[in-house]
Image (tube, rainbow, N blue to C red; front, side, top):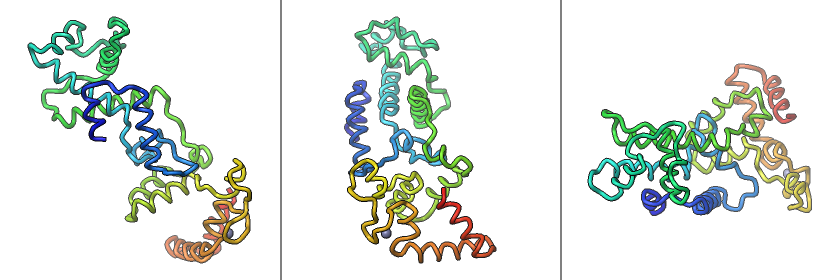
Length: 258
Ligand SMILES: [Zn+2]
């Protein structure tokens, strides 16, 4: 990635390269998983249910914009003179005047577009904060282009306090691998046989372990050590909530029914 970031400062990244890199990142994260959480969700902040994953197009645009702004400040260079010719030495008008620049100079049009939304570095603003601001603005622009989609699970479980769910998952002191499994369970993307059969990948919807219907509830609370773990969790929950075992079972049953 270091090489990609370096080149992004000099050349605008072609869409095809961004797509290829995104595919590689997605493959690295999910390997051969059939059901994946989309990258657009992982780009969100942890409070919003994402992983704070770097948005590749936004970062490559931000790197280029930062470098070009540094270049234009320098007097007497070819780049500086060239950018002044197109009036790119000052923050562009908003809405952007990209059409003034010929179509074949796509690189400069992109810069004019992005630049119109990002204020220049403030006199007291540290370099790092400025770079972060450029990235954040361009990231929000990228998000705006595709619109912010509601997550599938937030549509299904409309009354859940999702901020608390995300806070709990990211704040728990367990390994990254465990968090990924929890994340998949919460997003309801475990490839159970019931699900695989629906898309004709598995010949059966039965559990490989016991032959019952292999649904997510079955894996969590019915199969193998599931019942003991669930029983233990229920007891702990009842203890924490200072309530009876019966009312805790009620909560569990309601959860699994949905
Ligand atoms: Zn089973």
